[in-house]
Length: 375
Image (tube, rainbow, N blue to C red; front, side):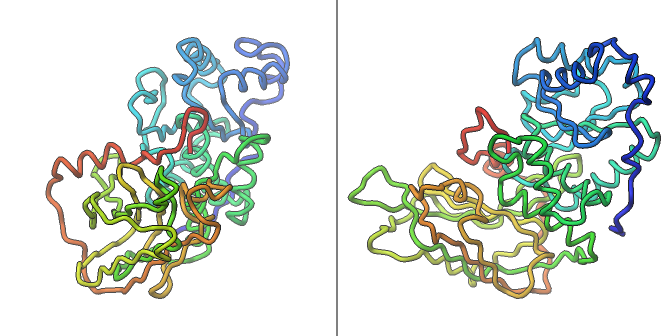
């Protein structure tokens, strides 16, 4: 089902004569064309695969430049834009043509099933015509767009490993800056997709979360005398809304009013959940908070869990991995999950309460300064 196929990337988006003579939008040379791509924040991975940041990030003039770019006669009828931006202010479907929405929140991966469906749609469109090209769009054309680009480069056989695909999109998209694809959960999902291509079955196992352990204690207190945090845990699964979006559905949460754990007095925090019947299946997000602040989070998929134990070190945990100087998270920080496979289905939910609706809208907030980067 997930057999890797060779897609005809070697067909140029334009034939040589058209490329040499076309001056309608980009000037008289390929250098002028490349300069326009930079001006409107479009990056080419192959002649038929592009990523692009939102024109709304740079103001109305940028939108006009993007509209002019896509009005090029050589592109008419031969391009599609996949929009991954869930943020309303970066929705481009009313301003540009040929847009297909697959929205999910910044700094998060999409559901693994969405990646499978996306690569099939991507394939189908490119195979319709040798001039067809695809543009992947999110707020800055980095994290979300590069996640799906890396997966498709694996799917099409351009790269044979997730490591190489991730390295390529980072090198091409952000050669002199922070890697475009650097959120550990997003990178993990590229590796998951490689595993599917290599024959790993996507079996929707239901697991019971028996225990979660965090060690050592992170520092999320303004006081040096009482260094530590007041941690509380939230566990959610991604569920298909029946439309284009998948939303988080909370299966376990605690009150924000939790006792303080001191960095000096405590070595770890344990959540014993065996009596809570915390069942997860598919895409799972575990998030840790202290007060009103999200400390860290991570995603995993139950089909990729071998055995009943998962351990994530600091480099594999979203947000924590960015604390290079160990201001908040010690170098040996880790999260451990103790799981058990059960022969049960998740209970069905027919409607969402207001708290869960609020979660759907705000779950992408990871307390990262996104003024310059989208993940």
